[in-house]
Image (cartoon, rainbow, N blue to C red; front, side, top):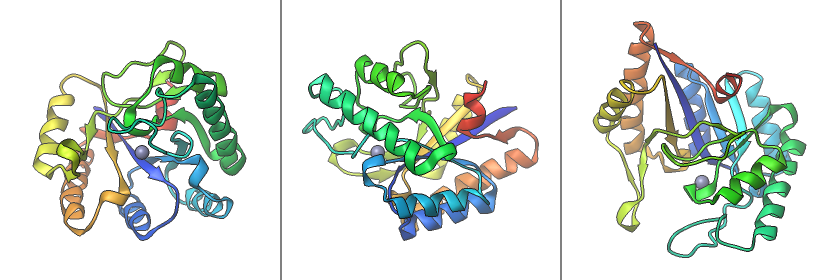
Length: 227
Ligand SMILES: [Zn+2]
C-alpha cells in the first residue's frame, strides 16, 4: 500500500483560489499540509484557517518568513544573506506560527523557492522545527525528519509557469510508487485556475480510485512526522 500526502505552498490569505482548493480536497477527503508564510498571514486569517481545521484534515507549517526573494535571478529567501539576519527571521517566523496557530502549528520548515544551505536547516532546527520539506533528493541535516515533495504540479522553467498535465503527474506517480513507500505531491493553490483545475481533478480522481481499490492510503505530514 502506497501512502500519499499533499503539501500546498504559499498560504497567506483565504482568497478564492484557496477556498476552491480547500473545498476540493475536502470533497475527496485528502489531507493537506499548508506551508504558511508567517510574515504575511494576519491574526484574523490565521483564526479563519484554524476554524476550518476543526472540520478538515489540515496541517500548518512554516514557509520561511516573508517569502521575499533576496537571491535575484536564482530566487532565494534563505542561504544568500548574512547568517545572523536569516537566523533571526527563521526564529521570528517560528514564533509567529506558534503564536497564531498554537497547537495547530506542525513544526516543520519549508524553504521558499526550495533554496537554502545546511545553515538554514540548522537555524530552523534551533528555532524548533523538527521536520523539513523541500524537493526530492535535496539534503537535510541529521535530527530533522525529511518529508521532501516528489511530484510538483508546477514547473517554472524558461522563466514562465506551467502546470503539469494529469497524464504526466500520473506517470511520475507510477514510477515513484515502485521505489518509495510514501509519495508526496506539491501544489500551489494560487496557480490553479480553471484549466489547471481540470487536470488536477483528473489526478485526484485517479488517486481516489486507487484508494477505493486499497492500493493507496492518504496520509498527512503530522502522521508522517510521528513515524
Ligand atoms: Zn513558496
